[in-house]
Length: 148
Image 1 (tube, rainbow, N blue to C red):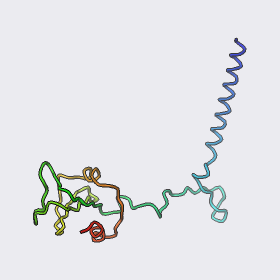
Image 2: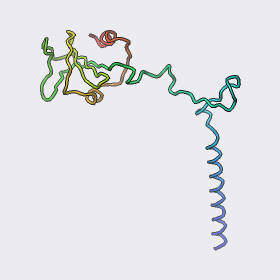
Image 3: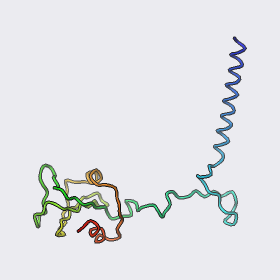
Image 4: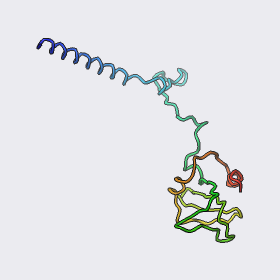
């Protein structure tokens, strides 16, 4: 019994040493999809260039690159139990809701009147808006896309 136990311990220790050697070997070698070797003409052959992922062609602008985001809000906008109406024309449906870089929320009616809504914030906007489906270079292009 003692000999079997000693042999099993030796086999276990040998397997652990082999596994450790394998892990150390893989830790030293970069994976082929993680790095790209620089061409020999670009410098020394030991330079490693890490690709920028995702690629710039498919990457959308970051939150710091845009002035704000907007969404259409066709139903009634109820804030603290009251239906929100435009203070100038009295409209209560068909808002465009903007969330600007400073996390303030603005409302725009179909007539083009804009008013800041202090009771709404970026958290409310993010919870109620869907994914961004278009990027527009100007405000007018975005409004046209949303039907205003």
